[in-house]
Every structure is written in structure tokens, then in C-alpha cells.
Length: 379
Image 1 (cartoon, rainbow, N blue to C red):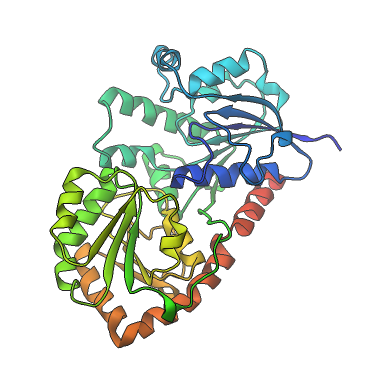
Image 2 (image 1 turned 90 degrees about the horizontal axis):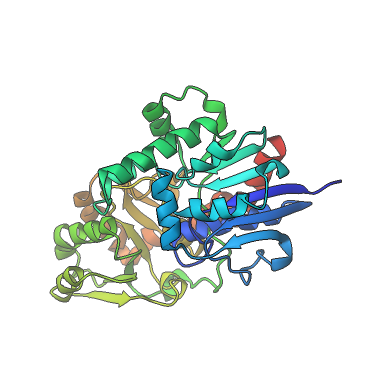
């Protein structure tokens, strides 16, 4: 049997450092484990030391950091990602017709379909509904950049043979935005968390810690934390629990706010989140905005950590009542958390015992990989 020739295209490095990078890594690792597959790669930084991404799995690789020339190429081609520079470098030596399948991370790669003239099958994985993400992210560089991204999203969605979305809300939003009636091409593909590296800690042996983890240099995380600390923590700081905030590059404003509060620990730029997560009794997600799906929830479940969050924070997860509580507004988190902490956290302990089971059945890498393999076979 001839090998299945797969071209994998990503604007982000598959890695274990960020949520988006981990999702890319899960997809690429799944492709590498597909029987009799041959992988080519276009994207920044490919780390062959990652489990399942061994060098001998790949034939042709174009992997490097973006340059000013890539940005110029993107501008000249009205592209929404500097990845087009690497893509054009690759296609000068290889034809897209060589492949049986092209897997694309994110809808920002519409330029692929301008080049694709054959009937090669394509899969696109949607990380965010870009139109909604741009509206909620104040770091959007310009209206022109936003228009390029939205045009790319529309082209990619309408041209892809299969569109992977993390949950039904994103699916409905995309179909409404771009008047897409063919729902069969949209397949739910939630995030996954890999097998925990460390053993779980029995609930009664854990620290009395409520934890928040995330990239603290992202405005949506900072805004969510600021709202929770201001609106909820004053009524919880005498509960006997510590609020532990862990993440990269906290702003001066956030550091200043935390320094004026009682019983809050800030751990900036921790080398690894898992040692912190496994000892916590509760994860909070006071997200105000957001699309996609929060990977940190699956990671918490893999260590048996219950979760309390807003609808934006827990969007896409099933059976939430078995491992946590979802609230409509940040202001409602105070009473919910206080209720869970009563009676020495017996309610939390019960949710904790369910969390690992939910992870294993729905959000483990095995489930994730088997789902993607099934999609490829059917395609």
C-alpha cells in the first residue's frame, strides 16, 4: 500500500508552551501516527524532540522564523499571515498535486486555496472565529489587517473539504457569518490534554488553593482577572484559601492590583504549570470574552481539579455539572465558590473524583487522535 502523503501547514509552532501550540502539536502528532503516512511540513520552528514528531516521520520540511521578507510578501499578496513567505518558498520546489491530504491550522491561510488547482483533499482546523476574536482583542493592528483575516476565513471555510471546529457555538457562528448552509463539512474537534506527567494528588492532601493559569500578557486574561479580583475576591479572601495566579509576563497594572490584595500569590513565568495545577483544589475561568475552547480546563480535569467559570470560559465542554459549575456572569462566581468551599470542600472533592473520568472519556489525546484518524479515513 502506498503511503498517504500529507502536507501539514501551520502559522504557529507545534509546542507545549501555549494553548494554541499544544493544539497544533496534538494535530500533528495525530497525523504522524496515522498508519502509512508521509508528512511534509510548512511552518515556524518544528521541534523534533517532541514525542511523536520524530525526524524520520518527515520528508520535506520548510521550518524557520518569519523574516521581514515574509511580511513584505504577505503585504504584496494581501495575505493575512506571514506564513505565505514560507509557503511560496516550499511551492517553488514542490507541487501541491503531490499530496493526498493538506491539513491547515487556522482559517488565516486562504492563500493555500489560491494556489490549489487540483482535487487534493483539505482539512482546516478553526482555532478561533476570527471575526469575533478581532472584535474582542484590542491588539488588532488595523482595520485593513482585520479585513484581510476575515476574507481569508471566508475563503478557507468555503473551500475546505472538512472544517474542524472546537464546539457547536463556533460552528453556528461561522455558518451565520458567512451564510454557509453545508453543515456536513463541519465536524466537532474539541481540544485535548496529554497524559499527565505527574501523579495526581489525593484531594485531601492538596493545598487550599484556587488557581488561575493563563498567558497574563493577553488582554482578555488580564481583564478577566481584574474583574474577578475586584468583584469576587473581597468576599472570598477570608475563606482560608489562597488565590494563586500563574502565567507569563504579567503587566505592571496587574502586579500592582495583586500586591494590594490579601491571600493572592502571583507566580510569573513558571517553567511548568502541571506541578501547580495538580496541587490545586479549584480552577477558575472568569472569562468575559473569547472564542475557541480553553485547553486549561482539559488540563485541570486530567489532574482531577474541578472548575468554576463563565459560559465563555467553559464553552465547548460537556457534562460540566459533573466536574464543575458554569455561571452567567463573573459576579455570580462568589456565591458558587463559597458554597463549594463549605464543609471542608466536600462538594469539591466529589467533583474532583468525576473530573479525571470525564477527561479520559472525552478530552484525552487518545480520544482526540482516534477522532482525527476516523475523519481522515472517511475523507
